[in-house]
Length: 231
Image 1 (cartoon, rainbow, N blue to C red):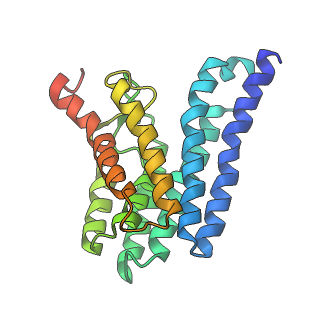
Image 2: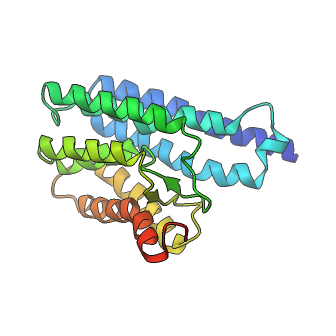
Image 3: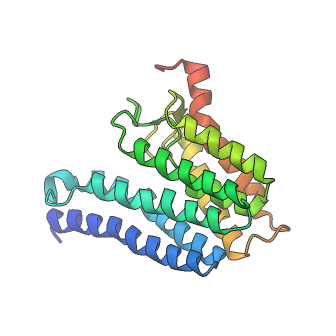
């Protein structure tokens, strides 16, 4: 198999995320939340491996007919933003008007962020919260906090998209990668586990989700505090 074929296969792998997004959406419409999150976790896994593969096989050079960055952004908006926002709206987590407020904030702010040319820093971290609403919503389904807490989290993270707060990329941010990458893998495992057991409150997956989520959310900001904003 030549390098051009391998590069094309990477694009096809990325495109499977659209299929997983549709399967997740169909599950969400039927309010099969566990199955929805299983598909979103699968999509999250694919998103984690297609980038390194794209760089390994240099898809920009060897399969230039497809724009891998654009393809990835389209699928990320579906799996990171659109489907999770719908789930938050249709669930019992946000009653009445609060659900409307959340989906308007999430979808609008994320659309602007995904089009922001400044979203990546020199060390390949994200500048601002990278719109990982799939991760937040899964944790909310697992922990079931008060709706005021949910609204506050949505508002704070939406605002954080446009503040110069750094959020690590699990694969591309080199600093602390020996910790960050295992944490991201662990988050994926705990997320799949929590969804598979239908968010059973007695599951240890909830503790794993909480610990890994806090690390992934705060690691970039911690690096800024320790090493400075340009460090």
